[in-house]
Length: 196
Image 1: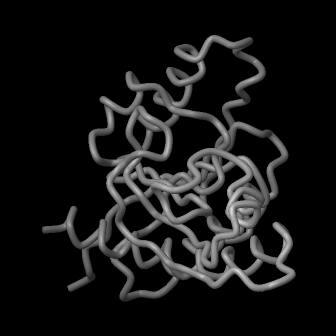
Image 2: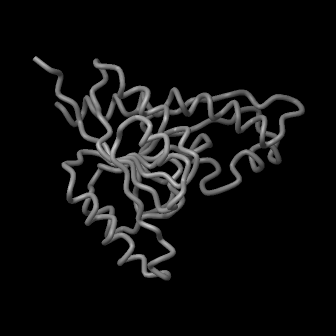
């Protein structure tokens, strides 16, 4: 009997390295999830090409076409999603904040990966801030998405040491390696929960 798998939509805005980690994890026949859609708000995002190379359907909802009308932008996303039977949305470098109205339609069904050890360093420039504060560890967090930015319940965290002489770029590269481990781990936890 084929293993049941949850159906994922992955949202991204950039090169899609975390999306690639999820694509690679889902290629494993034993992995309890499959990606049925990769959606971007940037028409030429590199992550779309990664999805197409893997034979995954893609869609673009360009936020610029909505001239600041967030409700219309999110409505267009919902319309795309309605064509798919989706259990979970994974944000993988999706650079738009989702509204409370959007999230209420997906209760506990949206997760995100963030490049810091939350609750520290919500928002942007996480590595610069951790180094500037003299922290000895950085890392990444996979968490539930709630209306307040980077404030949802934590699913998985991975820590890396901040070394003498680290720059935001060198730290980011080490954290990214851990992101590629943490996100598939968190996805497995979520899939097991949903399938139960």
